Length: 79
Image (tube, rainbow, N blue to C red):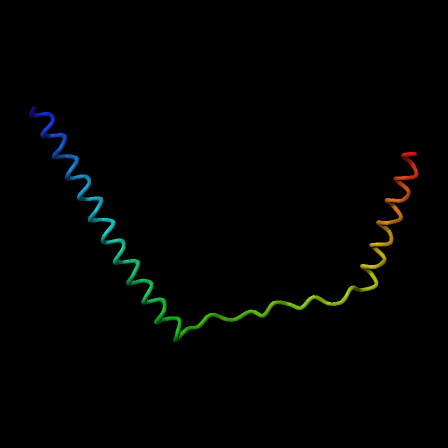
């Protein structure tokens, strides 16, 4: 019976320490979140605008023609 009591006592101590750690971590994360919001007002992130894709260039058209020709030759070689 003494071993069961010791086991239960260790279990309660372990679960209590895990609960305490998770509670402290929760409060720390909330404080850090609020701190980041405040700091972001004074030091905002740089906004990067996405680059606009240009119209197809002649080079891309030539590549597409070359691929089509190669595919046609492969089909003819298989026959």
